[in-house]
Every structure is written in C-alpha cells, then in structure tokens.
Length: 189
Length: 139
Image (cartoon, rainbow over all chains, first blue to last red; front, side, top):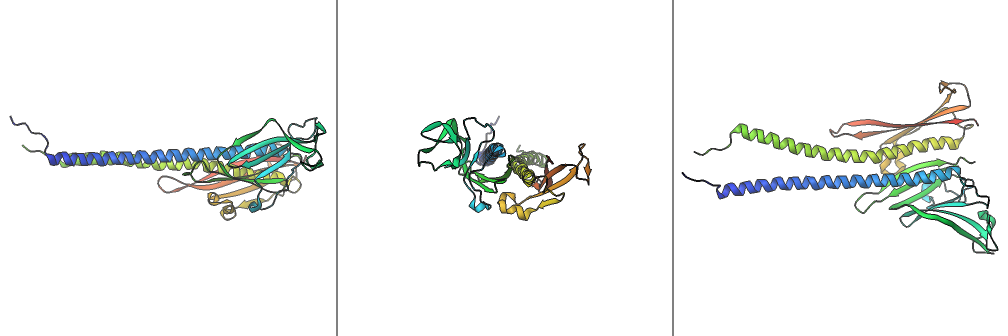
C-alpha cells in the first residue's frame, strides 16, 4: 500500500487560503469593534447633552431673575449663565445658580451674596460689587459640582424669556464632535 | 487514483462561504445605521422641545393659530448635524375634551413635529418623525 501525504504546493495553497480567510475575519472583527466603540461614544455624547440641557432647563424654568444679559446671536453666546434660584426660596434671602463651562466640564454652582459684616443675611446680586465694601459671594456647601464632562462647547443665547442652549460633546479624539441644540422658556415671568 | 473536487462541491462551498461574508457585511452596516439613529432621535426630541418652549415663551395672548415651519435650510444654521431635519409647530384652539375648534376657548394645543429621512441598509430612505405636544392656557 502506498501512503500519500500532501504535496508541498497543496500545503502552500491551503495555507495561503487559510491566511486570507483569517485576515478577512480579523479585519471585519476589528471594523465591527470600531463601529461599536463609535456608537457608544455617540450615545455617551447624546446622554451628556441631555443631562446638560435637562438640568439647565429644570432650574431655568423656575428662575426668578436672570443676572446675565443674554445676547441674541449664537456667535456671541455666553459660556456661563447666572440666575436667581426659584425652586428653593430660602428665608435667609436670594440664592443664585450658575451653570458654566470650566475647561471641558460643565459646573453647577449655587451661591449667595452677603456683606462680611452680617454673613447670615443674603443680599441681591446687585446690592454691591463683589470684593468692594465687604460685599462677597459664597458657594453653598456641597453645591458646587461638575454635572458633565468632555464638553467642548456650551452657549447660552436668545432672550431672558427664551434661552437657547447649544452644546458640543467630544467624547475622545477619534469620535466626532456631537452638537446638540434646544431652548427653554422661563416660566416665572 | 487522483480525484479532485467536483464542480458541484466547489459551487456549494462558494455559496456557503459567500453567505457568511455577506452576513458579516450586512451586520456591520446595520450596526452603523442603528448606532447613528440613537443620536439622531435625541437631536429630534430636543428640536421638538425647542418648538414647544418657544410657544410657551410667546405666551397665550400672542400665540396665533398658525403653523410655523422650519425647513432644512433654516435648521442648517445649527450645524451639519441638523441638515436633514425639518420642523413644524402647529397651534390649535381646543376644547376641554381636546377637540379642535375655531373659538378661543382659553386653551391652545401646541404640536411640534420633527421629520427626517434615515438611510436603511439597502440604501433606500425611510421617513421618521418625532411628535411632542403641550397645552397652553389663558391663566
């Protein structure tokens, strides 16, 4: 009986076909992985934008007085917005909320104005100039924190009754900038 | 005796192989389209919300029962991501049973509809819409 194995050329061809198949599989696996990662980045960007817009909307709807004068055009949009808190009206006096873009973080800060001579009495923001004549501002404890990160842009514009919010989220260097836009109407006119 | 593959065997293996490859390609394009549609929907929802907020800011007294229409051209100013959307904000007088009427009842129904086309796997387009509504009263 004659035993017959593979010839060298058969082996070479089989190896070539096997490596092409392995290469194709690896390539499609990598491209699907990339797509999934990209999709997760997009979803993270969308939920970050929602958090920013929803939190600003909730506070701004109840706002009593908007401290900043809001420019009408997006090009001049503010990167921080301060207004009087209308949710928890404190008997100690007015408190204020500022949403601001701090580097790539969006920060929410609740604070009040006072005179260093009577620190327990909260005053309106325009009762003096901070740093002059003992007029000062202080954050409420535990009320200065980051609500969102990886934010590349935040703009407030429009008018004091209808504030447009534009924000862009850049999850990482490879994912694209995701821009989101909405508006909120002040209810406490 | 030397024996190679028959034509039938080669054909069957080609079919099996190409079915596998085709499903991988379909999977990746479908994944891409699905992940994109999540952000698109969020964008549409926020646009609809903006339409309602604008109506609330206008206030009952100044709100006329007309349709405001924002087409692709005016939305494109918001950036490339908005170039495929269009929005319609409709204001109607309604009774307390939410039936549309011509009379000023002290209640207005505001409906914001955002429309966009989404590409599907076979390169055709499907029209999607996101509808949000609210009621504004004379109080």
